[in-house]
Length: 472
Image 1: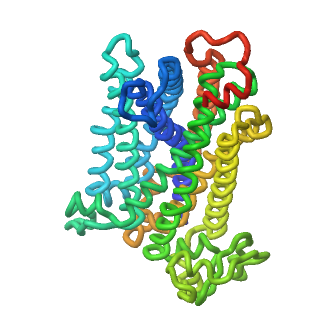
Image 2 (image 1 turned 90 degrees about the horizontal axis):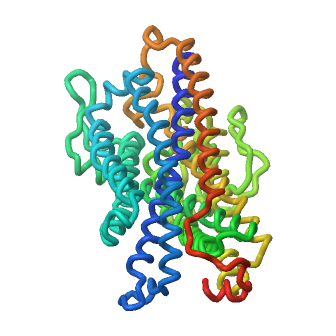
Image 3 (image 1 turned 90 degrees about the vertical axis):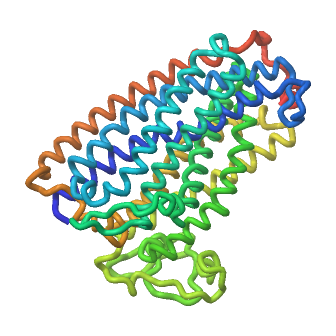
């Protein structure tokens, strides 16, 4: 690719990756804010929901936890909005040819994301932050539900856009070469969309769950805010176990199956498969060598790749050698390593969550300092796994911007309009700006954490550990 296209790709990679660090936590926390508020509102002892039934003191603790996480959500949401603005502008500056070509399709979903999801999320976040003293208890609860709905609806329309780029459907060629949408329902029923969306939101929920558990573990280790800490750890580890399991099967399994069916080049790169094989092995560890077209230093499980992708022991899997080199992903090693980083971290997080739930069941979680330290240090890896997943999807789609329709080299603005030098200048500018914003974001979070949740008066010393476990 020409130098200006490479610079455009690097700039978009920087802005998209930095931006996504915020929505992934926003969407994850939205789920748990809604849950915590629901327990607080519907958990009265006279309710007919025994799973939610709590004492007045417990309900107040859940209410306090919901308000605390809403503060984190609000700061995260604000930074997500600010860092997302450059992405919109880049469609018109660096990627004008792509916008002209695909705007008739992706403009639909991006507009829906902005009008319905973004504004709904913003309005109801304002209501929730205003406090239950200014609105009725029911309105306050409903606002939490709409924060969750708006956040996940926003994610749905963005994923619908990306799913069309991965597997274009419901379109036709216009008179000037651009594509136009034939059926909005066809766009939303894209076979790629459902599993990509569920897999993506599962990743967000895992991030939110581990952030909850990490914060709770931090307060337990520092002997502060015991009620809030126990709620956060308990909800976090249970949710982490549920969503890490679902992330592997069925969502991860079906997303990989879609890649095998619709993007064989991407799937082969993910698995480091060069030779077309009958009964292909599932490689656990290996080093792809694109020069020799081999996978070196491998540890593999015979036939398992065929079983997972085709549900047949001896199914034939297409290797990169049977795909034209010009249609290979731009960097096969990048796709391979990103995919295995995602899977490897996901497996480790599943093990951590399972051990956490086991210790919770045995009444030892709140007293286990090694486990609390593990939970507190594990949450950054959820961000790494999610970014690695997106690198797998986006780098695997290369060399296409719209798979099978428009190549990336044809999607960038002309070098005469946006030369490489201009792209490098703005790339450096974004890097400095994002460094400043990252520092500012961390400073705001530190202030919120230092203040802690607004809880009812707690005992001056930590209650006995056994009593803590029982109350959990």
